[in-house]
Amino acid sequence: MQTDSKYLKLNKSEFLYLVVEDLAPSVSQMITLRLATVHTEEEIRSAFRHIMDLYPKLRTIVEPTLFSQRLKVISDEIHINALFDDAFKIKKDLPFDSQAFKDYQNEFLNESFTLQQALPIKIRFLPEENILLISVHHMTCDGVGWINMVSSLMAHLNGKETIAQALEDPSMVPGVFQKPYITAPIQVFKSWKLLSAENKKTAHDKIISPAETKTDFIGSVSMKHRYLQNELTDLKPKAKSMGYSLNIYFLTALARSFFERYGEEHGDTVSIRLSYDLRPYFDKDAPVFGNYVTTSILRAYRKDMGSPQRMMENLQSQLTNAIDRLKHKKLSYPWLLDKAFTLIGKKFYSLGILAGKRKDTIPVPTIHFSTVGSLDFLNKAGEKAQVRDVIATVPTFGMFMTLCNIDGVFNVNLSYPSAEFSDDRMESFISEFDQELGSLASMDSETVTETTEREATTA
Figure 1 (spheres, rainbow, N blue to C red):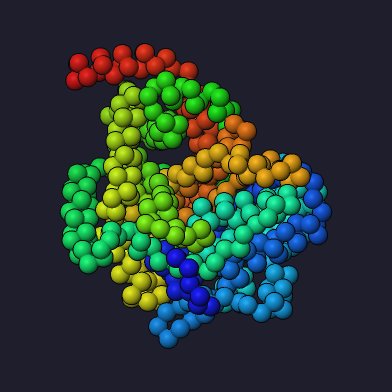
Figure 2: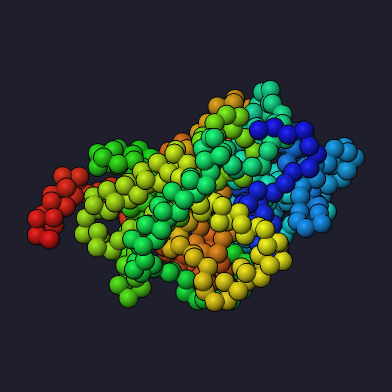
């Protein structure tokens, strides 16, 4: 999916991120990269300048067209160097464990982009701490994209050869529609039937909304970070013994944390939004860097609180169905619906989002959960440059939790609208989630199974 054009159209996700950029302080993906090895300012600067050459989309600015927007790829080296000088800065006197560092993280997360005059990436290097703060505008790439970018960075720092990426077609169509495309109307109809049946089935679910205060504006976000007490060696065997993946184990603990905190008066359902990469479902030439992600909602029910096994089974069934829809490309109707909104233009799209925020009609899940997974592969390029930790976060309309691990140690990061959630309650929620993971891990699998069977018999 390469293109020789020096201009790129925006796909439906990228257009949405550009719209929200005018409404929110920022629409960035912020990565805190803690290095285990020591590097000079010039070494890091040179490495990132090299990354700019590898990924053409990092060298773009937004250019308005008669009716829309597009990305212009800058080819002039003098221009790129000047923009890179603005994007790369050195920060000092910010110890990692200090409140000053946490405050700066929040500030950097909310720092806006001027996309028509500046690059869609900002880098802050803290040489005293061997920390890189990287803010990439979400219009530029998704989570898979920034992971590929960081992987290239580590390879370059280790002296390995890195391959420049071709400018890629932003179209998501190959990951959404089956060939031949002439059957698209039938695919859309079948997808609509699936979505309608699902909406009918869940119409009476009372979704738990954890926001403490409702606002009619899109404001700044805050973030909280924690290293979990429960490590991979503790949790993976337990999840396996219960017959489920570690991902399902995390989802179950997350849902139970909400049910423990919020009583029946708050609702009977926890809705968890998950993101899925469409790249594996492209027929050929899957893209590397860009936005090729879709989402689905998994639901956990309060009635299953007495049986973790049953909650796991329910979540696994929903996840299996979601992946089946990806594999067999049954997502065309909701994708086409989102795509249609781009036709009304940036101004009216913005007005629609603001109206939805004021009327509280934007469907915000209980939480958006992203399991980045193990990032140990980042350290396989060599010993010269090693990653100690990666902390990722994204600003959204509600709670957004990311989870990843290096060397078996999990770190979780939670972002949330500052005006709608209190810092103390969000910090305590992460603690409760960690405790719930330990609680599930300490349960005997036979006891869980017996409890499930007993409840099924007496139901």
